[in-house]
Length: 129
Image: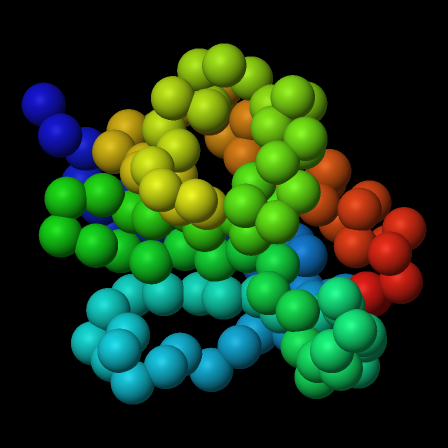
């Protein structure tokens, strides 16, 4: 039986909110209008690959039709980070940076928290926050 996606979103939301600060809540794009979402960015001006950026995406959640997407940019931008994530968690990765969350349990919550902590350490090391 499929879990209630609003319940999953509501469970993940406070976990992401724990990272604000140092990250800021980003305003949703027009494409997300009407979808439940929460996105965190670093709003410190940085230079990445020779380009100045006013913000760097950290992580986010979006309630989709059949899942809650947990968007974790470090999985795409720094593939070696995946070596630190559990195989069961990585099975939920679709595409480059989106984990499809269709159920929630303590193990998965711990995996998400660990991934966010790894990313926070990485962003601090890079001077992005």
